[in-house]
Amino acid sequence: MILLYSEKFLDVDLPQVVPICDVHDPRLIPLVGEDLHCLHNALKKATRGVVLKTAKRLWVGLARELRPDLTIYVWGAAVRGRNIVPIRGAEEYRGYGVYYVKNREGLKLLVGKSVAGLLLDARHFDPHLTELVVKGRVSCGCERCSLVERLLCNPYREVEVL
Image 1 (cartoon, one colour):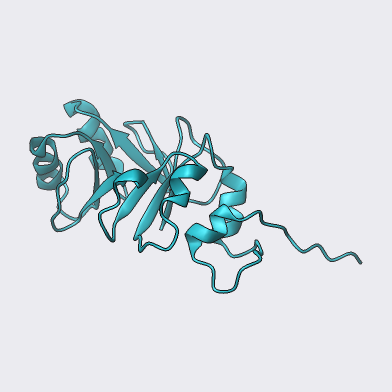
Image 2: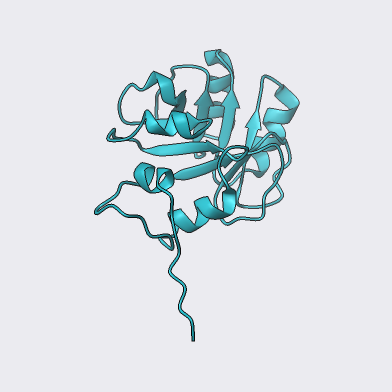
């Protein structure tokens, strides 16, 4: 699972984590802080999940109570549970899970490790190239590359000239 984190909506087909309260596109996953009104609006309209940026379990419990069917990604607190997925930084690897990767150096820390998903910062990863890598349209020099390794390699596309 690859998610993109950006400050604004990007025109790619990947799920995107954006700091907004009102979801207007099914690709968007709202990033919400400790704001009750924003959390309520995001939970009402979200389809893929909500990223809750908090260190307090109270907010996680509230979000879970309002939408028990929705996946809640928690960025900042080590909380696990049904439909609750913690997001950790790449430098604090603790086993299988979802990791926030700010740049390529952070991605190098995850090579050879088991990850459930990556939250890539769109400021340091080209969203369109990332989309091509995820869809398998980019070749890499290694055999049986993991997704992390494919994101790290210098990809090239084969172009057929007619």
